[in-house]
Length: 114
Length: 112
Image (cartoon, rainbow over all chains, first blue to last red; front, side, top):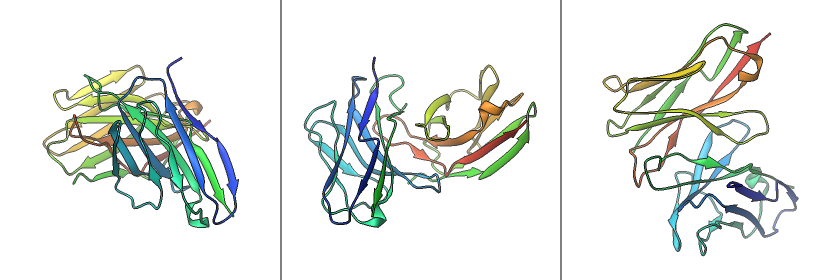
């Protein structure tokens, strides 16, 4: 079934650790996005990619980095996690075409940095 | 760049009543306006969208209206049910090659 997958779903980790949040989609989409969502609800765009080898920073400054080596895969990495990184991270994808702007979200990763 | 404001931030209604959430946008070139519903602990999901060449769109109990002149659009939910309780996000985009800009979200509580 076409979907967006995120792993892990929950992660508790200590300060200073390097972490990678995985995002894969079987939707056949070319565009992918990472959002940070705090308990205050707002969705903040932190990274996006319009295709392989294309990555851009979003509207909210983030210490994380991303890569897009394969169309279906868009991992997010934090080199040194800090308590301020505690949040929910949502991956999304969209496609070109008539409904190109419609974004579909993954289930999210809840990160807690101690 | 685009800025989307969403009101109210919280909304409580009695089951069976109607709920209205309003959004305003700043970029007159925006032409696509989706609405997402996020239930507790779940991912945001598209529930309805409208393009700038249409003034109103309905899907069963939900409808969206767009006023391009005033640069605002609204989500209307009629005959609300407890399962409508969720966070609702509006968004706007210029379309091809442009990102979605989201509103801050509205917590809707339907009391039974």
